[in-house]
Length: 337
Image (tube, rainbow, N blue to C red):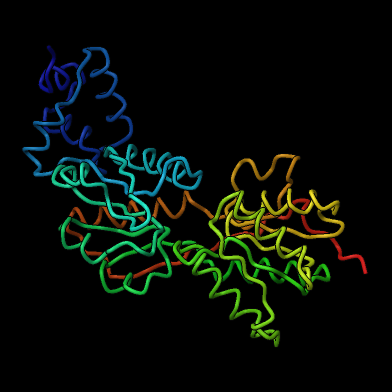
């Protein structure tokens, strides 16, 4: 079986350079990297992770904590995290959190002793994050989890979508099309996205001199069924809205179908805006105008911060809100008076 010495001989370089290439160190030129990897491939050489971990005192593994991989946002984040870590010669271990409570399942806790750090993406506000941070005792960076009152005190770094900006973009877009009776749906207080969006929504509407007590807010879960239920209830009430802003795209899909079930049309009668921009939002069945969360940028920044902490670089503490973007499709039109 070939070893690093054989690879160095075949590539015409030193054994230490081969080690630097497979550690992913930045001080090796691209031509030399290509030569070493070509030599390794020709010799069927596979770096020994266990030996490298002993030498470096690192496992080069990161734990990613999410809620449910069946939820599209968390599946997407897991996929992006895998790719970002692979670029840095790290591997990801994905753990699901239990809900309600958001704590990591007991059977998975032993994994934290075999990773270098944790990227915590669970959005459940009922989690005992204090206990989690104390128990893990590893570098932790938060991603997606905005709006938790303890966030800034428990960890040094977090990267989140800017829900406040998203609310402003959505409400301004509705109002520019003549809508003022706007209902918020999917604002479940359990989830940081729903909680943060509701706070920003109430503040922004109040700032525009609209009495917040008149606002219709559906606090169902951020799901298709939750969106359908809230939209149907409000449309059948005494003061139906002309527009729905959903805290997640799946809630928006439910709202659109609830509108249609009552013989109304989107966007002719009712406008709908979502929050996420999943691939399915561009489907002709929904053609959803939505707020795009830049998951790739959020994860990239979070991974950079986490690896810097692992390497002992101690970047300045801070919590960053990444700008979002309005994607204008076909679910909002001029309100017909």
